[in-house]
Length: 475
Ligand SMILES: [Zn+2]
Image 1 (cartoon, rainbow, N blue to C red):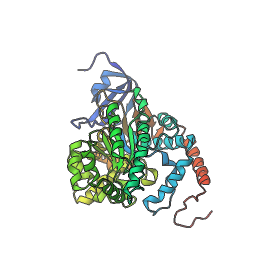
Image 2: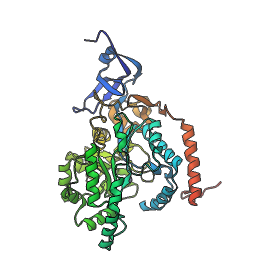
Image 3: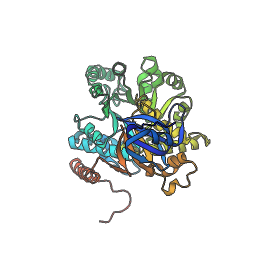
Image 4: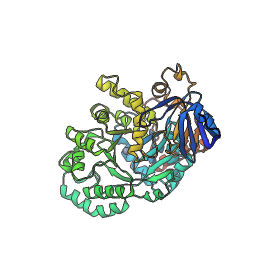
């Protein structure tokens, strides 16, 4: 029976193919969501909610898919201005010198523009929350301000290390000395942005970030874990991107990294590792037992032929209930900040690798991009699904594109055919931040012009040629 006296809401999204990603994975084929004060207050059939609520704003999804916002669990915002700054066909580590030089030149405006451009791109492609990898902040507040201006949700924190992974391999004493002199300083630097969490409504919050990949002593790892536990947040770090990282860890630790992390008591549900392109057989069980997460970045492996999608165990771990989510990584390491694209590539490579068409289905892609992403961020009780009480972070698709027709299977249409093109409206914390594919909060022309000007300026300062591709250019 309908409520005789409709209740007030801020926003009602109605007439939708509502993919809730709740515990039962319900899809309401004619569903609606009522939102108030930034949270979902009701989920149900359209006919019921339309009668029960009087909303300040009503969005008619015209039967299109509505799903929880995607979560990007491994992303570097800082280097966004360096997208395609090295020549195509170069080795993955060709980007490292230019990144290092750029980092010395990052002023407040550069950090602000890089973060703003990244956040806008993510939001435009249906991502509502991200986990930054540890490059930020450099100038306090610059990146957070940009992220908040776009209206996105993000987790940041300076990535800390006490070992230079390039040192010490051939001389264990040098590595040990370096480590002991650096560890105390490093521990003091942990959790740079945890102060943000005192405001539980803040869009930008803090986590504990380590740089990872052979750059932290056990003492630093355990101090970081203790701090994460104390603050109820995740400990996030890179692990095993390249075979070289794996080899260095094996030499330094005398065993496989995940086995070592389990033995020292580090591995737990609030540990999130990015990449993990190489997992050996003895690492599977301790990883599964821990409940830890992996931010899988398939395209960051594929772009440089690293082998993670062929030799990695992401699929095997996911099928054994490990929490695997997706990350885009960095501007030079991926095509775009588009989690749907990562999911699509993951699904295709999983099928190709296994020869099985059911290796990763559209539903798996959505689960990994939403609720698994939320778990990887330590925010599964707040985001990642469309359920009463959760933050209202969701994406409304359009279904009038050629790629959306015929509409026999709307979810496959979105994940396989229309992809980011069909992102129409993006809501974060109950606020519409993207509408008809455009930011409601940014001057899009201004950000494009300023970012391009900044890049020209940076290349001049670095005295580097702008990469010109492989064909002759005629001015
Ligand atoms: Zn990374």
